[in-house]
Length: 112
Image (cartoon, rainbow, N blue to C red; front, side, top):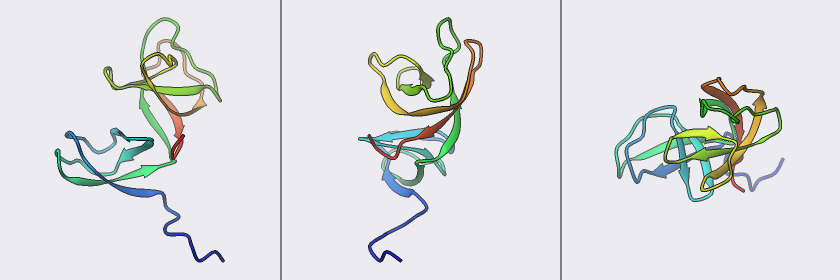
């Protein structure tokens, strides 16, 4: 068994730059994770990185996404989108979503 593994549960403590609610996607540099608890700016919360999760999705024309599509996060609208323009690549779609769906399942990359 490898002795150099620090943790295998993909839980990472992050110091918050802004308030966050439990279940929110938190992006810190190139780390993408779901906040396990709520916190205020300056607090440290633990995020689950590299997990499959349900996140809010843009509900508009041309926002359908297929399994395996790259998922991007719109930091302004706080939702997943299929548009790379001005958005952060966060992971891969695991269940297809139509234009009218308001949530989507994504597996978050631990880092790109």
